[in-house]
Every structure is written in structure tokens, then in C-alpha cells.
Amino acid sequence: MTGKIAIVGAGPSGCFLAQALLKAAPELEVDVIDALPVPFGLVRYGVAADHQGTKAVTRQFARVFERQGARFFGNLCIGRDVSLDDLRAAYDVVVLAAGMPVDNRLGVPGDDLEGVYGAGRITRALYEHPDAEALPDLGPNPLIVGNGNVAIDLLRLLAKQPEELAGSDLGPGPSDWLARSGIETITVTGRSPAARAKFDPVMVKELAKLDGVSISVSGAGEAPDAEAAKRLDALAMIDGHEAGPRKIEFRFELTPAEVLGEAGKVSGMRFSTPQGGEESIACSSVLTAIGFGPAKDLPRDALVAAAADAEAGALAAGFYATGWFRRGPRGTIPDNRADAQALAARILEDLSADPAKPGRALFDGQPGIVDYDGWCRIDTAETAAPTEGRCRAKIPTRAGMMKAAIEGVTTR
Amino acid sequence: MKISILYGTETGNAEMLAEDIQAELEAAHDVSCDNLADTDPAALDPTRLYLMVCSTYGDGELPASAKPFAEAMDETSPDLSNVHFAIFGLGDSEYEETFNGGPKLLAELMIARGAKQIGERVAHDASGPDLAEDIAFPWAEQVVAEAEERLGAPA
Image (spheres, rainbow over the protein chains, first blue to last red):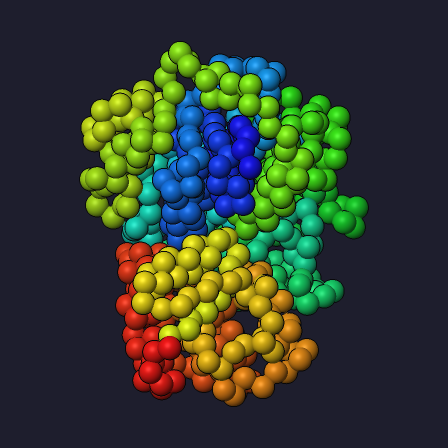
């Protein structure tokens, strides 16, 4: 089977889709396009720096380009450098797998105060995304709003002692920022009861390994079913963990009502409780981990609303969506693999190729595209001489990446 | 010898390793490679050696593609007393409490139905310094040699 397929987004969803398409139909021309000069999306910039085992999935993705014949077009932003209409006209199939990078806002009074930060903003800066804003001062008592795995990742990184980050790829700037944070207490709040919190129990159990912290869990409540019991068991396991002076407190059933401020800066958070009461907790910053929305480059919500079959990821003839971009910001790497495999089967069923379509020739003359070999040069530059206790030294700027993509090993 | 590699995978890493082991053994043996999700435990063949490659997911659980196989084992309780298998695990010691829980469960299921395990259950650690294939290839060579001794001459 032949055909030209463009996948927008080189994160796990896009790479798994390319893998599944080429496994079933090795003759396809599959081009994976990313706005960044580097591939792998959230595996590089979302999976925590101290979860290198999870990042091993990139070995599969490398094969998609090295053995299965997919091509990488990095540093190419669809919706800005090339329009979506032009892309659709040039390819038999276009698939949007661009993820959901924008932090959801709290949507309560005070959510624009200085000291309110989205988890994505903080993790992008921690993981040295080239478009990240600077890491802010969180003060001694940050409060995390959210009970998903993103909240737990953020908590764990903020809680860790410098030596607990050995073997990670956390850069020198973020490492120094964490070491100097001066954090005394981290409060983690969720709107749901603990039984319905979204985190995976294994992520919570991992906190029991932390060296410098003492953990307390309040108001975890009862488990209505076996799935919830696993969550409560994990929380019970960490409750009372005492290994150091930094305090972590888990709270539940607190619905944000207002971010409190003094002189334009966060000073606390007011919540409503299920009993109709209110509770205020003093804090020096508010970190929101309450989900993500789409970037502005592509009209995601309009496309999904007008989709022919949104559940299957079919937007229109020859036009599809997968991963977080389709479903919203829920689900882990294997969920996106399953999604991509199902979509690959659907695409192959629907595909009718027009040999007259130009495909990748559309990008001829487009300056600054980084191909897979360019990424390999960046990768080599990053892994050739990591600093002590680190497995990689990420190049934090686009200019640095572009230089390494052309020249190979260079200095940061 | 006739070898069937069976993988239980969630992210695809175990599937990739299974395919690598197949490529490594193919020159000298008759090797197939299948997803556990597509494998009927009652149809396991006593003349073959089964090399199982299995990850762990969630809280020390079987990966998604091994679950239908485990359910079929529970439902049909097949007699596997003439079946020989070896098992290789993929795990991540970041989650130390449940490290390699999946392959452990799978091995216990096989043994509970009478299957004979060849060699030790070896585990790769995704947070360790080694590549999975650097541990898995020597393991496969060793268990195949052991199986040839126990099951008779190479077919």
C-alpha cells in the first residue's frame, strides 16, 4: 500500500502512529513534523527528569526513523510556517497529534496574581524546553492544586534533595533552583475525595523513598471499591513517613474558591468544603496541575467539534487526530499507543492515495528544517559529556539546538 | 530447536525486545514471535520452548497484552505439565516495591499449571545502565542451550 501521510507532532502519539502505520504498510511515506527542532514531545519535556526508565520508550521511536523509514521534519510549525490547508492539499492523510501544552487556569478570583503558576510552565522550565519562561521563586510554602500524576511529579521534584536527582537529566540551572528553593512545606490539595483522586498508586508509593521529607495525609476517607482501596492503601503507606524536615501535607475535598493576595502577590488560598464551609490555607505560591488545553497554532476545539467521527479520531476525509489532541489531556503513554494503533487501522482502511500529491516536496526551500540526522547530532551533543550525576545535558535554546543539528558536538 | 517467543507488553518495549530476540535466534533455530494477547494457553506445544518476555505495569501488575492470556489460564485451567518455558522481565527499579511484578505473576501462573521453568527469571532494569538486549541475548542463548539438553537434540 502506498500513500503520503503527514503526522503533526513527534511526541509519543505521533511516533506510535508512525510505528503502527509502517508496521502494517512499510511502503507508506510517513513524515513526522514537529514545531521543535527535537522529537519525542512530552517524553522529553513532560516525563519527569528522574523517570529515565519511562523515557526508554524513545528507543522504539528511534527505530521508527532508523529502520521503518519515517522521516522527521523538526523546527517546522504547522499553522505558522506552513498552513494546515496547504499541508492537507499536499498529503493523502494529515494527522494532528500536537498534544495539549497550555495549562488550564483555576478560573477563580485571584488566579492572575503573581505567584500562581501552571504545572506545565514549571515543568517546561525544569526540563529546559526552549520556549519555557524563567523559573520563579515559589517561596517557602507552595501549594499544589490537583491530584493527578502531574501534581505528584511536581511534588516529588520539589521535595527531592539534590543527591536524589542522580542519574536524571535535570540541567544545572533547574538543579540549582531546586537546591536553593528554601521550601519548608508543600501542601497538595484535591477537589475530589482521595478515593477518586486521579494519581496512580505507584506514583504515590514512590514518595515513600524520599529522603528529606515528612509526609502527612489528612481526610483520605473511605474506599467505596477495590480500585479506590489501592489509592487509599498507597496514601496510608506514605502517611507518617518521616525522613527529614521538609513537610508534605495531602488534603482532599477542597474546591478552590479564591486565591488570596497581599500587594498583588499570593498569600493563601480559600477553598469551599463539601459541608458548605470554607477553609483558607496560607501559602507563598499556588501551582496548578489541573489539566491542559490546546496550543493556538491549530484550531483544535473547532476541528474536533466539527469532526465526522470524533471518537475514532476522524475529523474529515484524509484528516485525523490522535492522542491528547483528540481525547484531551488524560491518559499515559500506553493509552496513547492504543489510541494510535486503533487510528492506524482506521487510516489504512480509509486510505485512497493520489500519486499526484507532492507530499514532503511541499517543504522544499523551507529554511531551518531539522531532519532525523540533525536530531541525532543534537542527541550526541547532549549525551557526549553530561555533567556529574546526569545522563544528558539538554541544550536549552533553539539556537543551540540548531547549531548542534548542523555542527554536531558543541558547547552548551 | 522450535522456539516461540511470547510477549506481554503495555508500551511496546517488551514487543521490541521480543522481536530483537527473534532476530538474534533465527539463524540457528525455528523461531516465531507472538503477542500473549493472541495466544491460547491450552494450545501450548510440548515440543517447543517458550521464551516469555514480559513487562510490569501499574502497581506490579501484568501488562495489558498479558491479561487475556492470564484470564484464559484462570478460566480453562489447562494442563501445562509438558510445557517448557523461560521468562525475561522488563521493569523499572524506580518503583522498587513492585519491580518486575508482572513477569513474576506470569511465571507463577505457568508453574501453577505444571509448566517447567528453564533457567532463572532474569530482569532488566530500565533505570539501570544496561540495554535490555545486552542482558536478554545471553539469557536467551543460555536457556536455549539448557532446553536443548533437557528436551533432546536440536530439531
